[in-house]
Image 1 (cartoon, rainbow, N blue to C red):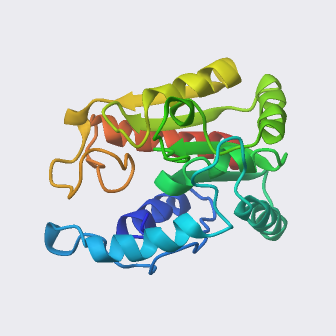
Image 2: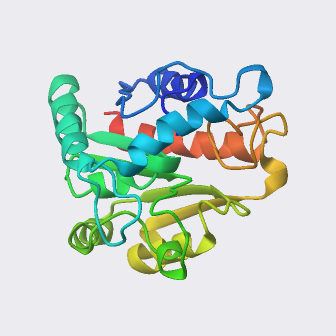
Length: 231
């Protein structure tokens, strides 16, 4: 949320810069619009992006144990791009609202590098919702089998982030075992100039300097893509 911000587009350019093809699905919001002009969050814009998505039948926001219907379209998009571009396979990163989408997409054998960056769904209002993610049991079983065969899943979050409770990462560790690699950062690693509390690891809260924890997290994502996707 709220969509393809300038810093999300910057991240995509980083992916393209290592030799991959970067594709940005437009699911909500206004592509290219800054959610915090002049350093202040545009709350009206955030709400106009979030509310329609929260009530859309394409996204699973409130229920547990379900995969969002939009995943079928994203899998088809990944398959089409793989056929168009070639290479070993496809990588995917979900951020915030879409954070868990890469996990559900990994039922497709072409998805070789799933990254869950601050996965925030389902909304963590109860203990049961904190300790789960937006994927159906059937899809999770497929991903677990793929993990047993060598698939690696990377997860990123700030430790204080209430939108991404630690219980969610502990759930993924239990379900996926050593195939899930959790990167959990302290608050002081976040960009202090960002307009919200620590949340967006590789975009809004990135400190793009060598040696910074968020830069290392970004480099980890790019290295996963590089090692799995480039021939």
